[in-house]
Image (cartoon, rainbow, N blue to C red; front, side, top):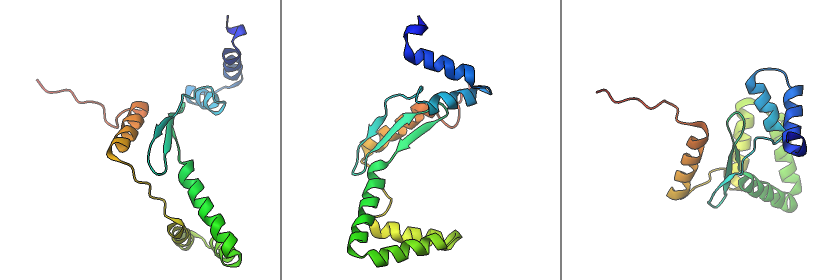
Length: 143
């Protein structure tokens, strides 16, 4: 009775219209939001949301990014000419010089480090490992 289930119908259409490897089909289904599972929230001053995708994981760090943008908007409201000149300098620079300018701006806005309590860090590690598995397969004990 897949015809009565719109999700199954949409998945069947995507699979029929996507040629390629299983990874490419999984990527198409994931891009369409068909493989998404609810994200796990990792607490902290700037929470993260971790969810599996068809080919790995997605980590949503929008609270930290939002805080940085709010800080930049606040500075822009106070000193528009200075901030605009700084952003133009970043846009015109390249390579290590541009990286240094971006890092200086990010540090002034509060930095990009996000600290997590031990329990939250453990949850993050456990969630990532549960999605992607360990880097090395478990080794058997020699008898």
